[in-house]
Length: 117
Image 1: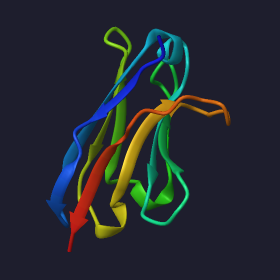
Image 2 (image 1 turned 90 degrees about the horizontal axis):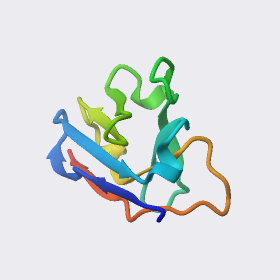
Image 3 (image 1 turned 60 degrees about the vertical axis):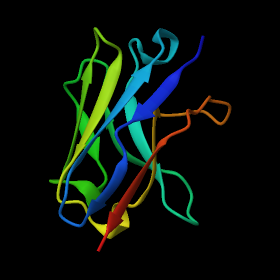
């Protein structure tokens, strides 16, 4: 069964922190790079960060570098995103999925992050 369950979102003030978590089914998680994506209001979903299956390589988009940290627990099939120094422009729905994705891929419900100024 395909499963992606994101959690950890919330409402925080600018400068605050949140830690997002994602539990994935084995069919999505095993031996795959995993990414965090976000969709801001009125915008398309975009990649925020990804981590390779061995966790040795991570990448971030410029907008979140030095503020976000992605990591994974391969035993628990979870991937996390530690978000610090949050800005209002980080507001959106955050999703996890394999990286890269395919047009036909299943997506979970996501978790809402709202950063107030």
